[in-house]
Image (cartoon, rainbow, N blue to C red; front, side, top):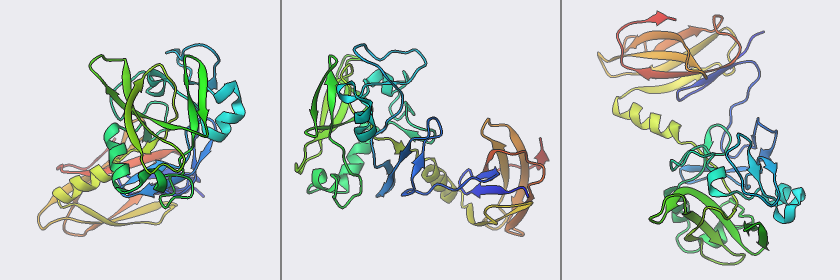
Length: 296
């Protein structure tokens, strides 16, 4: 029997056996099968382990060659398994230097900005270095993976350095912000380090869900319930609109191909979607203000 899985936002539904990711679940990177713990801290969802993605290279700069590259401490892949990879700035950004870009993170995640690290630290104003450390109250579990500079490694289990996607200084391509700390240190410090040096990375989940929720509140459109989940042949969405307000629900796949759009209004506050016409795969839906209903 065909199953369709929906997630509210732009909501996903999946024809097949997909499971909904919730922050705190184990994240599986479909690119290589690597698994990462995750943790919700305030409004943010973070990886609770350093990224370990890419091919280990030795003694040369990471380059824009369509291959994800990393250094492993002392050129030992076991250290990448334990502490994650070490990345130069250009490589970790995947050569897109816009702050908050996906970089080498899995889909749905990105390289955190300097501001996002500030928000993280603000949850623990007195001793962020302690609360973010292994055994701290946050569950963030900092890893002291050291760093690499000029292909020389240093400070394993002494120094934690986490890359941000925000460049610093007056010369583009020279330095970028890093957050760092030491075991038992109360601080979680901000500095700007050379782009050529290699540091660890923690990815942060994209915040599209929050942004869409805020837009929905402004336009007074709410999704109160959506079921069954997973669906089989149909999917029901319960929504709220103001009196005399109308809108559309638009369904599209991960390639942005539109599959269905239907007008909704305040008369019923419920719509039932027949999923038989959808091919196997992942789909999204969103609500916008429109006047027509069509299938494409």
